[in-house]
Length: 119
Image (cartoon, rainbow, N blue to C red; front, side):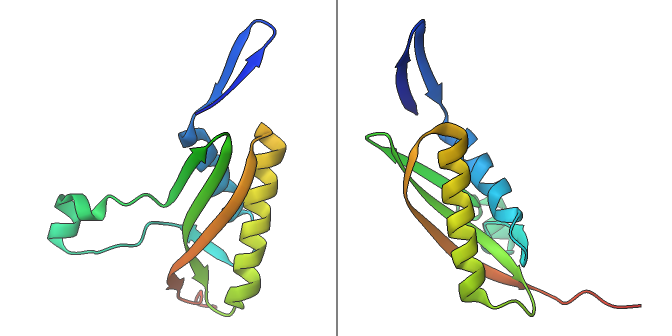
């Protein structure tokens, strides 16, 4: 949590809130199908701790955030420019909404969505 002294007390922003902001900012980028942890689809992964990886993780160190976003891209989009757009949008959105500096945004592409069927 980031703690800032204010006139009447302190302000704390949970890393869960930062993760939600990052998720929504990533979904704003054209070509992102979903923000998902991916992971294993077997019974062990579903029932065990191995399948509980978060889609977005945020760590705060001395008031500076590091973000990791796992996502699935849509087929047909160039992955490198898409990831750069996600990095920029996530960083700017968190900084604009919270005032917390973001040092890095790691984007991990964990899947590729099938092209939509055209009728």
